[in-house]
Image (spheres, helix red, strand yellow):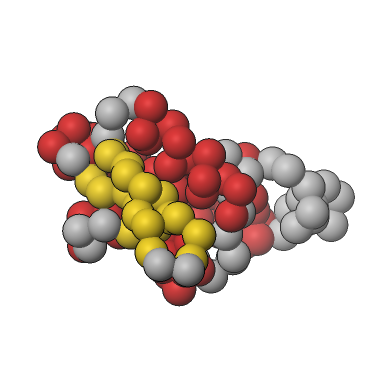
Length: 132
Protein backbone atom coordinates (compact mmCIF):
# COMPACT_ATOMS: atom_id res chain seq x y z
CA UNK A 1 0.00 0.00 0.00
CA UNK A 2 3.05 2.27 -0.06
CA UNK A 3 2.34 3.25 -3.67
CA UNK A 4 -1.09 4.67 -2.76
CA UNK A 5 -1.16 8.46 -2.52
CA UNK A 6 -2.05 9.48 1.00
CA UNK A 7 -4.26 12.49 1.61
CA UNK A 8 -2.63 14.75 4.17
CA UNK A 9 -4.56 16.54 6.90
CA UNK A 10 -4.04 19.94 5.26
CA UNK A 11 -5.48 18.85 1.89
CA UNK A 12 -9.11 19.73 1.19
CA UNK A 13 -10.75 16.49 0.14
CA UNK A 14 -14.20 15.06 0.70
CA UNK A 15 -12.58 11.90 2.02
CA UNK A 16 -11.26 13.95 4.96
CA UNK A 17 -14.64 15.55 5.68
CA UNK A 18 -14.07 18.76 3.69
CA UNK A 19 -17.74 19.00 2.71
CA UNK A 20 -19.24 18.24 6.12
CA UNK A 21 -19.47 21.88 7.22
CA UNK A 22 -23.17 21.89 6.32
CA UNK A 23 -23.75 19.64 9.33
CA UNK A 24 -23.43 22.78 11.41
CA UNK A 25 -27.04 23.62 10.47
CA UNK A 26 -28.67 20.73 12.37
CA UNK A 27 -26.28 21.30 15.27
CA UNK A 28 -27.40 24.93 15.55
CA UNK A 29 -31.06 23.93 15.29
CA UNK A 30 -30.60 21.36 18.06
CA UNK A 31 -28.88 23.91 20.30
CA UNK A 32 -31.64 26.45 19.72
CA UNK A 33 -34.26 23.80 20.51
CA UNK A 34 -32.73 23.45 23.99
CA UNK A 35 -32.84 27.14 24.89
CA UNK A 36 -35.54 29.72 24.38
CA UNK A 37 -33.16 32.40 23.09
CA UNK A 38 -29.41 32.53 22.51
CA UNK A 39 -27.01 35.08 21.12
CA UNK A 40 -24.43 34.11 18.52
CA UNK A 41 -21.47 33.92 20.89
CA UNK A 42 -23.35 31.52 23.21
CA UNK A 43 -24.13 29.31 20.21
CA UNK A 44 -20.44 29.36 19.25
CA UNK A 45 -19.50 28.31 22.81
CA UNK A 46 -22.02 25.46 22.76
CA UNK A 47 -20.65 24.22 19.43
CA UNK A 48 -17.09 24.45 20.72
CA UNK A 49 -18.11 22.21 23.61
CA UNK A 50 -19.45 19.49 21.29
CA UNK A 51 -17.07 19.80 18.32
CA UNK A 52 -13.68 18.18 18.78
CA UNK A 53 -12.09 19.72 15.68
CA UNK A 54 -12.89 23.34 16.53
CA UNK A 55 -15.46 25.56 14.88
CA UNK A 56 -15.45 28.19 12.17
CA UNK A 57 -16.94 31.16 14.04
CA UNK A 58 -17.55 33.15 10.87
CA UNK A 59 -19.20 30.09 9.34
CA UNK A 60 -21.55 29.84 12.31
CA UNK A 61 -22.66 33.44 11.89
CA UNK A 62 -23.11 32.89 8.14
CA UNK A 63 -25.22 29.83 8.89
CA UNK A 64 -27.32 31.77 11.41
CA UNK A 65 -27.96 34.38 8.72
CA UNK A 66 -28.94 31.71 6.19
CA UNK A 67 -31.27 30.00 8.66
CA UNK A 68 -32.86 33.36 9.46
CA UNK A 69 -33.25 34.28 5.76
CA UNK A 70 -34.91 30.92 5.12
CA UNK A 71 -37.34 31.59 7.96
CA UNK A 72 -36.16 28.75 10.23
CA UNK A 73 -35.04 30.96 13.10
CA UNK A 74 -36.15 34.32 14.43
CA UNK A 75 -33.98 37.06 15.85
CA UNK A 76 -34.35 40.19 17.89
CA UNK A 77 -32.02 42.71 19.41
CA UNK A 78 -31.57 42.44 23.16
CA UNK A 79 -30.61 45.66 24.91
CA UNK A 80 -28.80 45.63 28.22
CA UNK A 81 -27.83 48.67 30.27
CA UNK A 82 -24.22 49.77 29.70
CA UNK A 83 -23.58 46.87 27.29
CA UNK A 84 -23.72 46.62 23.53
CA UNK A 85 -26.94 45.23 22.09
CA UNK A 86 -26.90 41.54 21.22
CA UNK A 87 -28.82 39.79 18.51
CA UNK A 88 -30.56 36.78 20.02
CA UNK A 89 -31.89 33.85 18.03
CA UNK A 90 -34.75 31.44 18.63
CA UNK A 91 -36.06 28.41 16.83
CA UNK A 92 -39.51 28.73 15.26
CA UNK A 93 -41.98 26.19 13.87
CA UNK A 94 -40.30 26.18 10.46
CA UNK A 95 -36.98 25.52 12.20
CA UNK A 96 -38.39 22.47 13.96
CA UNK A 97 -39.66 21.21 10.62
CA UNK A 98 -36.19 21.82 9.12
CA UNK A 99 -34.62 19.90 12.03
CA UNK A 100 -37.09 17.06 11.45
CA UNK A 101 -35.99 16.92 7.80
CA UNK A 102 -32.32 16.97 8.79
CA UNK A 103 -32.79 14.08 11.22
CA UNK A 104 -34.75 12.05 8.65
CA UNK A 105 -32.15 12.70 5.96
CA UNK A 106 -29.22 11.92 8.27
CA UNK A 107 -30.92 8.73 9.46
CA UNK A 108 -31.20 7.59 5.82
CA UNK A 109 -27.57 8.58 5.15
CA UNK A 110 -26.47 6.66 8.24
CA UNK A 111 -27.89 3.44 6.77
CA UNK A 112 -26.01 4.08 3.53
CA UNK A 113 -22.84 5.10 5.36
CA UNK A 114 -22.89 1.97 7.51
CA UNK A 115 -23.00 -0.13 4.32
CA UNK A 116 -20.18 1.88 2.69
CA UNK A 117 -18.03 1.48 5.82
CA UNK A 118 -18.72 -2.25 5.98
CA UNK A 119 -17.88 -2.71 2.27
CA UNK A 120 -14.85 -0.42 2.56
CA UNK A 121 -13.49 -2.34 5.55
CA UNK A 122 -13.91 -5.59 3.60
CA UNK A 123 -12.11 -4.13 0.56
CA UNK A 124 -9.24 -2.83 2.69
CA UNK A 125 -8.96 -6.13 4.53
CA UNK A 126 -8.70 -7.91 1.19
CA UNK A 127 -5.89 -5.60 0.07
CA UNK A 128 -3.92 -6.09 3.29
CA UNK A 129 -4.57 -9.86 3.32
CA UNK A 130 -3.42 -10.17 -0.30
CA UNK A 131 -0.28 -8.15 0.45
CA UNK A 132 -1.08 -5.55 -2.22
